[in-house]
Amino acid sequence: MPNYKLIYFNMRGRAEIIRYIFAYLDIKYEDHRIEQADWPEIKSTLPFGKIPILEVDGLNLHQSLAIARYLTRNTDLAGKTELEQCQVDAIVDTLDDFMSRFPWTEKRQDIKNQIFKELLTCDAPPLLQNLDTYLGENEWLIGDSVTWADFYWEICSTTLLVFKSDLLDIHPRLVTLRKKVQSIPAIADWILRRPQTKL
Image (tube, rainbow, N blue to C red; front, side):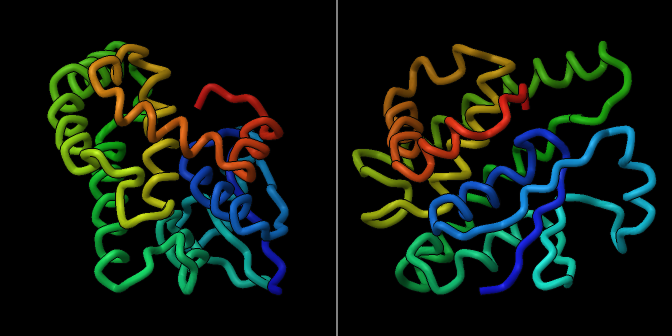
């Protein structure tokens, strides 16, 4: 088994999907959390200047979703068939497209608040309706067992609910899916143990 070291801020953010996968697959790793004050110095040492980084026996991998795909390859979390794997990737990319539109690093609070409000009130509802329709009466988003797309939905929705607590009030099936992910023993244990952060 390789030695894994995950490098990210002390927050859930873009690294949380990697932490969920490690927890579910029961893979040991070092969860190295850096302080914002130390970031400029660390940033200058990274080829693309971004985190999370996953060190695998000293080799740096970047891009959280690429890392997630690497870790889930050859496991049922990726989907049980090539078609399911494509569906998993499509749902993850759909969610990530939306999450990437938020101005997380915007310095001006008034601009940040305005864009957040527009995205949550105008853009989120049709996405959630599409996701609800896609899920339908199924237990999981893809196939007949949990995939990392279900994990990513739970992670993204947890963050969105911080900013709009009634976001899922008219989507009980999506709420049920969140709860199903949260009740998986390995995930429940991680949620209980992880540092409590806003994002």
